Image 1 (cartoon, helix red, strand yellow):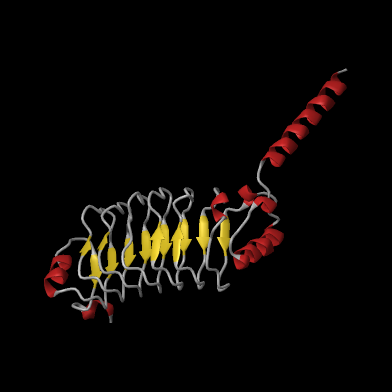
Image 2 (image 1 turned 90 degrees about the vertical axis):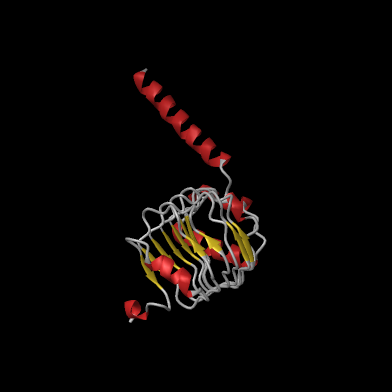
Length: 219
């Protein structure tokens, strides 16, 4: 009698598990706009044995000429997204609330939307065409590298956990850095900042600011 009870219990657990899996969206439910992105996910699904959409936590698609991430928003468990060396011109990542790492360097980005990504820690956007970025709500971001862009104005004061920032080769004339207690390093070479701005940065205690006015620091 007891044996039958345990058998029924085990069958019930197995049935519940199957129903939960069936309730989740499979990779077949993932309808993407870009064929190259689809090919990338398909290949990695075979490599890592992804069965359902929630299995995908890390996605790396480099050098595949991807132009759109349309449809990727179903990957709600994504923590790391790396789309280095593609053809993206604009990207909206605000639906990816679990992201901790973003690398969309060496694309053609004119705009990016990533406000309120509360878990984001690292952000790499070098070699794009960005003119400004809204950092609102990125309270855990500790490292950013946005060199070789067209940044003309930037307020990084919302980045209260920022430790290192790289803005080499942009068009910055001003950078607002107030209220960032963890900030230790900023790289600002090859930006058209006036001398008085450099002098103000040099006066900041506890922060190393590398710019064209203190070349001895970066020889």
